[in-house]
Amino acid sequence: MIDIDFLPQAYHEERIRNARRHKRWFMILMVAVMLVGWGISRQRQSSELAWRADALEAQAYATKQKQSEMTKLQMERKSKRYQLKIQRQLDQPVTVTQAVAVLGQLMPDSSGLTRVKVKTHRPAPIPLPDPDEKKNKRNSRRKPAVDPEQVKDFIQLDVYGIAPDDVAVANMVNSMSDHPLFEKVTMHFSRVGERNELKGRSFRVGAQVPLDRRYLPLQQTAEVTHED
Image 1 (cartoon, rainbow, N blue to C red):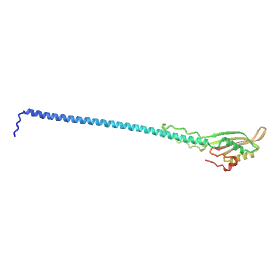
Image 2: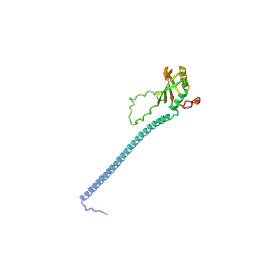
Image 3: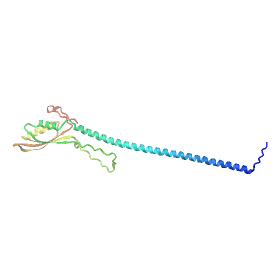
Image 4: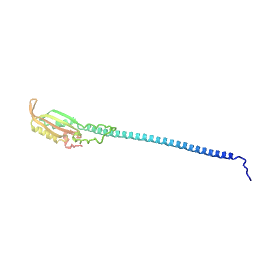
């Protein structure tokens, strides 16, 4: 079978050019679609990364806030425990009245008290520090060692009285020194004095009563112990 083409050569060339043109536009369209898809994908990735960054930043801020709150709670817990310790020390069974009562029992019958000065020493509570305050570690200095006597809880007694002689004063000092309720019994002075036209030895005796001592009446002092 013989095919005879009666179309001119220009027609065939135009068809070839149109086919090439259509192919070129198809390739351009495909590239454009691919670029648009790639741009959308990049935008989605950027949005996702930005969302993740915001989420991590929010999580880090929440963690920092929790750490700050935890630090405050720990500081407050430490302060409350110290205050509880002070409160328990305040609730110790020994009182000023009991200490003076024991002092009256130890006083010789021939002696008498003219004045008793009482001062209770208690440590100051630890202030609650601010956890947000920044401390310069380079310029920080070591705190001096705390004297145990400064943090000890005790009642300071200064007893003034008059006795017939130094023997009565010495007996009183010895009785206070031997009694487990008192410690650091000190004779400050004993000199000739007169009160209500009675002459004798005017004296001053100092002593401490630790608040961790347990009070018992005089007839039970053999069983008294120190409770640290």
